[in-house]
Length: 298
Image 1: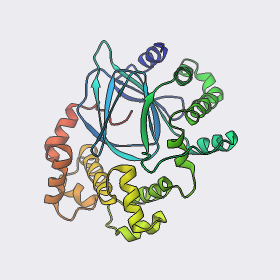
Image 2: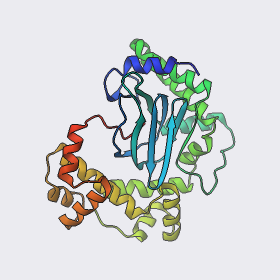
Image 3: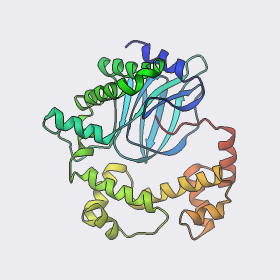
Image 4: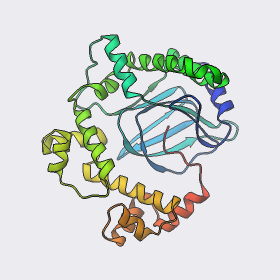
């Protein structure tokens, strides 16, 4: 594999952290040292690592991947991520392209190919070696940053090529399940969208199952199969992450933040916060302020 993608990301991602670009949905990431674990919700995306290594924990499952590999995520997933290999001389370098569902659907229809089969254990994320063709297409997408006048005309074409290669590759089944009507991932995604929009409210599994168009038992089974957590555990992850954001970015005290995200008991919020993030709210937020460049995605 050539070093072209590494060199381009290094040149355009001159600062630490995640950097939005002029290419729609494209983000570049740079980290010059290993990071502490950072909690976040990973959006559907493809992440191609050009240098360094990353760990991603989804519930109790740990993925580690590095240069020459790419990650595909097809579902909003609460994750714990950290850069585990990086230095000033050889920083962690990665590109992340958020997946355009409408473009994926158009490509599947135009390709007129059989829908890739998925197994009952098929997960909404996967890691694989990056084929040369996919790497070269990523190089051309990032390379458009050198020619901003070409971005409106060529970026859609290169993005389309990149998604086409994904649909012809190892993760075709993972992507097809995003698009198949009444596929269990689509049903689970309805439940996830409802929880994300209403995480501060209590709910019953029966009511959530109606939103997902599944039976209660089927929802519980497939939700856990896809996310490695129950709907209530997923809700708790979102509540704690939003509470953390409110304390960090809006200077909200822990009791107020806990109430805002749906906790009736401040002590329960603080207890679950500490269990999730490894420290009480104030100590955790002070630590985050001293380490502003932690990376949750890509």
